[in-house]
Picture 1 (cartoon, helix red, strand yellow):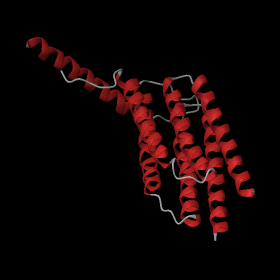
Picture 2 (picture 1 turned 180 degrees about the vertical axis):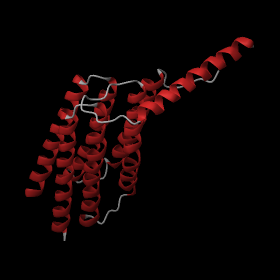
Picture 3 (picture 1 turned 90 degrees about the horizontal axis):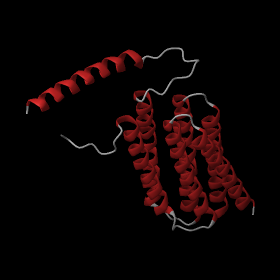
Picture 4 (picture 1 turned 90 degrees about the vertical axis):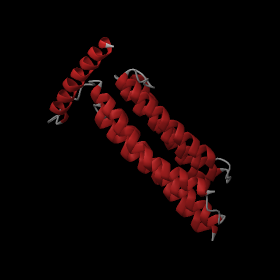
Length: 93
Length: 133
């Protein structure tokens, strides 16, 4: 009983963290701010999926942790290249 | 024996969630892209690592289930979060996002100025070569 309460408290804290990061996504002055905040939203999503899989006592969501980690990393790298060079995939002349 | 697993898992998950909240507060309150990236990458990585290790230990102690996928996820997050923060900070610096007013010194300034000049010369040279063809 106390265990479930602690897990739900952790989920609420993670929800607050995601909302704070979304504030930075909306307000951020430069686009690099927005990308950093979106990356940490992805990281917080990974943590909350781990908490959910403990709460529901299932192994089914571990694939999802790996998948969201990889997609968040690739998205961040693509956005960084877009900010730096103006293109995502460069073609050699 | 399942009680100790629940205690360890709950403590680690709570620590991880609190670290994520601290990282989000830093992400809102700090004045600059670079300081915000410091908050976001360091403490957020530590928070998610604590939460994932808590999940791993909970399933290991209660079920005796050792998840390779979860180990892989921990390894991947631990490997890629600093790389992503570094790349986005470098992109922000080269895109000339301004530093905060309180910055004491900017050691990269001279270095990147030299590199920009060299790259501009190389671009001109390659344009000349293209026209020569």
